[in-house]
Length: 225
Length: 115
Image (cartoon, rainbow over all chains, first blue to last red; front, side):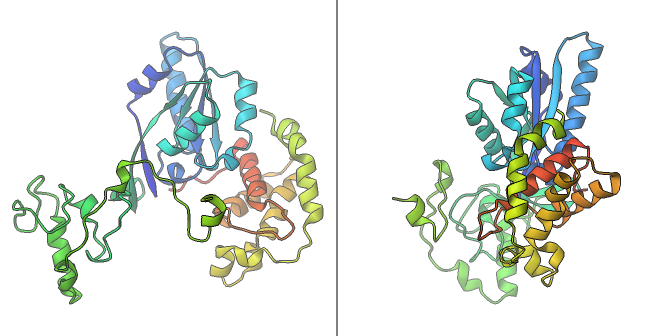
């Protein structure tokens, strides 16, 4: 899932500095699951902001609202009513960047600021501990790299084997990080399929460099006329 | 925001319509991957989840006691991941109604925290 992490407090304060009435919008999806921007995190951030405002004698109002999926307008439910009724002049969001952009699209006249950084598509190692595993390159190669992504896990995102800097299975960029290609080699060797990385594969198109629209199989006729 | 006065009032007719249209046919069941994964446990049927979450809130006019609120929370989060893939042959928007139940829970300070 997508992993988000809260921005530094000062950066958040800088975003809302000019505004009086702020709505902090959280997301009940990935941002909640990674403990970065769900309802609880909204409550915590709002309380911290309120304490700061009180201590510094600043007059501002801040409220919170959590939508179930910030990336799906159908799940916005009462957000529009809340924004209208509250007369908010600024929206903070704790959803991922995609959700934040949808909220900004929905309310084009209100400044929208992310209170979190969207970090990665990752796995959960423990509560609050996540590791990046995918950069959505749009051309997945892990089928022939033993389920290890060279784009994410190799510091240089190399596709054709390790660079000259691999040293005893570790990366030259950071000796605490395992060399992705060393791991790929070992895993494929264990599975007796080293030939998978000996084959010539077409070059990667780096599809994540342009904005993509995803139409699932079976939905082409509906969306691609 | 007063959920009962504003939200429930706004969507009252939509909830009422869904509750009366639902024929309890069970056609929605197989579109729920959780229902299938949980050995077809009837408590995972989308219609069951809808009736016992937003249906209960509607029936009680938004005045749920602690136990009822916890029951709705369990249905809305533990028994539904809101994948929005459930299908009703009569056109009831079940995921929307369950997300409305979640909205009610959230406003009452009850939600899933994932830790």
